[in-house]
Image (cartoon, rainbow, N blue to C red; front, side, top):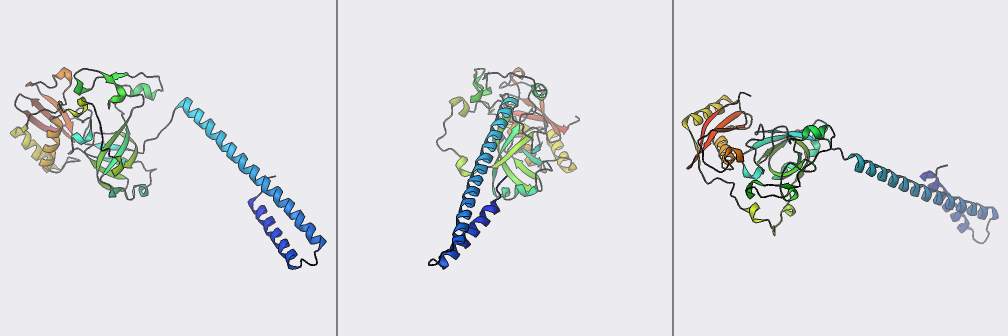
Length: 324
């Protein structure tokens, strides 16, 4: 039989009343009253012990349940559901910066799923920046991960700034990791309904979002140390970005058409394009870092941007609406 918390309270109250009656006539103790007090004391002690045993039993049961759950998670892995996804100005990986701060003019929005209550975003607009935890959903091994197959990952990576030299993957920001999870800081521009408007980001369109946290002052490390190859900016091309007359006319037409989703002025578009191109988004096979008249392209908002990296400048030659 389980002890109800009210039974302990009732017994305590009855014992208190009996004790008060005894104290009212200490010179003429009632044998029956004394017996009642003794009986109530015995019952109260029994109920108290039973309650303690029940608490101990619940504690042990909860501990065992946690242990079983932990063992199952260790065996089967953790399952996290995305809380939303990104609508991004970057349609694919080409042109998407490795870090959002490299392209402050990049724009996007995080749309939360309907199971996330809008009230969970209250007061978030009081912060200027947020941390975003996300999934590298365009990794080349996504199909294997989705099929719960064992996947391998390289222990060492050759970062773009090291010219082919390899370092351990955990000293890089490579998306190819044991768990395909990324962390980035973005500027928060607006919050409404289940939507977070952001800029200065590095998200490909459709990126699944796992969590959003405010960036606070104590996140900043004043005595930060990094290797020289991280601090050096050899990947920034010291060339101005120029726009051909035809490209400028196409940008004007795109803005006037009001068909773009993220950009509403030519200057905003030009800033974003220039910030992307000085990062030299070409691959090593496309002669990254070298001058060539060959044309390359990337997609921004609904436009396809064609450019050539010349000796004296990076020249944008086309900014037409993408046909894909």
